Each structure stands twice: as C-alpha cells, then as structure tokens.
Length: 318
Image 1: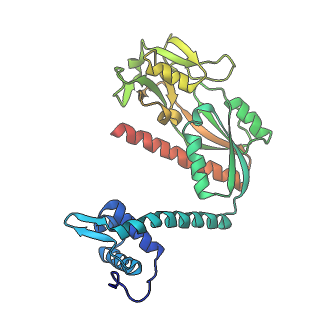
Image 2: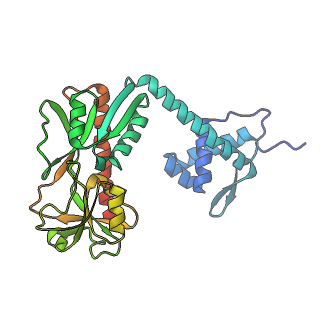
Image 3: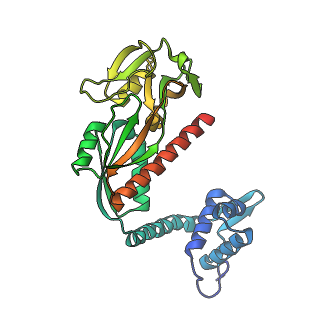
C-alpha cells in the first residue's frame, strides 16, 4: 500500500499555531496574505504548513499560479480547526476569569438616548475585559437615575448634562465625561440637507420638527434649541417612532451624538454649526470613591464613547 504524503512512521504533532495558520491560509487564499494577517514571515508560514502536512499525512493545499486552494484533506483540517480554535479561545477566556479580581454584580442605569449604542458597546467591552463581572442594565430619565444612585440602587448612572437641561445636583458624586457629543439633526434620505456633513443653523429655519413628548415632566428633545418659534408637527416619547416619522418625511428631529449611530437606514444625521449653542455632554456618575467594579464600568463607558465619536467621524468622512 502506498504510504500517504509525508508519512514518517507515526503522526507528527498537530499544533494550535499550525491550525491557526492553515485556517488563515484557507480564508485568505494565499500564504502571503496569511503571513501578513498573522504577523509571520513567509518562511515561518511555509514551515508551519510543512509541519501540519507531515502531521496530517496528506497535502493540505493545492498550489496554483495565483494562490492556493485547500485539498480534500485540507478541508477536513480547516473544519476541525474552526472548532478547536474556538475552544482554545473559550479556554483562555475562562482562565482569564481566575486572574480578574472583578466579580459579582453591578447595576448600571442610563438615560434613554444612551441605551441604543453606548450602553451595549460598554457591556460588550466589560464582557471581554471582566467576564466575571455581571452587569445589570436599566433605563430611566436622568432625575430618576440620580435618585436611584444616591439611594444605592445603582452603582453607575449615565446622564446628559449641559445647556438646556436642569442643573442637576451632582455634589459629592464622582463624574466622568464619556462623550462630549453634540446634538445632530435627523433628516430623511432625499432631504435637501441629507448629504451635508455640517450645516449652519440658519439652514434649519422653516423646518417642521418631531419632538419628544414631555407630558411626564422629564426633559425631552424638542426643536433645535436656538431657533425662534419652531413648528412642532408631532411628539413621541419613543425614539423608533420619532425616526419613523422622520423617515416618512413628516419632519426632522434632534438626535444626540450618543444615539446617532442607531438611526435606521432611511434616515441620515447632520451636524449643525451654531456658535450660540454651548452643547451638552454625556456623563457617567457614581457615588464618592466608587468601587473597583463601578470604576471598571465607567472606564468601559468612556472607551465606548470614544469609539462612537470615531465611528461618527469615519462615517461622515466617507
């Protein structure tokens, strides 16, 4: 019987690094691309492939003029590699819990506009960086969040602060700005302002507005703050409803930068140049001398806020 390719009397060792290399070559279609993506030299990639082919006993790739394709044996290895590498990554995450001193439960409360993008991104970061930390999430208006924080029912609250909002009592609380974001205007695609990155505030004169419903007494987003006598066509407490009204061409609405990435595909957001508007910030607040768990949540919020600002700038640079 003909011995298989690379047969040496016994099966050589299959390694995790070798599996990673084989899978990357299969996905990228070439040794060169895999070397670049994994940070290996070309000779190192070739050595890994040779070792894995010796271990398998068969050639794993068929060399072609413009790259490589996996052989039948290579397809089997790639299929197993995906499962093995996923298990290895899960093992590393489980082991990281042992070295992470942060564990237990912590409660985070956010105002509605921060629920769509900021809070989910921060929770995803915490799951990766502190997998032993269980974070519960609740949504409420800023006054309610501050009452819960002072009563000890929340470890961290995310609030909006700045021009046009009440002067909340933050004495004795630890504060950290997580996003010095501006207000933007949501308009339907096809609107005369939809393709602009930034417009002067004068361009908003005469527009019809969709505003938040303030019947419950909580602060809401209305028309652009410095406009005189704006026309409010509809009000709604729900962000999806406001965006739906905008998408239907029934008006435009304010959207804070912290929520700008959550607008639906048929809605665009536009920056506004208004020297008379000092702006607002999104702030994470905790009690004096926050616990390590609360501090980790605040750090994740700040990192998520930086990512939001970067993504907005990138979106409007394209």
